[in-house]
Length: 103
Image 1: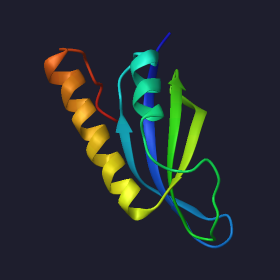
Image 2: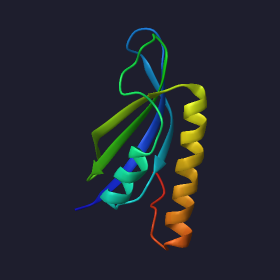
Image 3: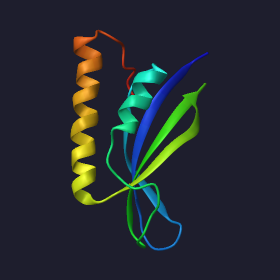
């Protein structure tokens, strides 16, 4: 079965309108993907009208299945993006695993 894991970055303003502006592919290993997402900073609930959201998806045959969501402050988002980038580099280059490009 064709499966991969992604983390999206979105901005939510007042109301329900959400704009996704970033997406990371973090490979096809469920344990590694879950470990990466579990180490990110943020809160499980939004306590203000505006939010920076990081969502964890398992994509099965091209269809996204939500697995987790974090609401982040700007500083947390910055740290999370740096951490995800470091982990993608480690997986792709040091562990020699394939990280499929986003299509």
